[in-house]
Image (cartoon, rainbow, N blue to C red; front, side, top):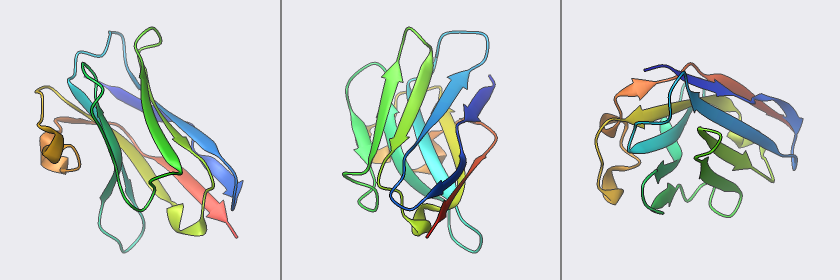
Length: 126
């Protein structure tokens, strides 16, 4: 299973970016996809996650109201729409997928995920 994360870049504070996570070559066979970020010197943080076969989602308090996670089954892609970006959102963003169906409370836990994509860098300038 290969995950491809894309959409990062440099943006000014207050701007928007949309990250995409696609599973290569097949329809998402995973039960859940999460977006994590890690800035230098900081711990990895789950910013949002979604269970693909029901509408359950998780959004971290630090991004609630600004980030939205969604799944487009037709395009086989999970998106992270990031609005009102702040300099503290600067990090490498990774998507991850699970091969089992985690309970909702486990969605932000990295241990719930089996596959990880490469990071895409998001840099927000002040």
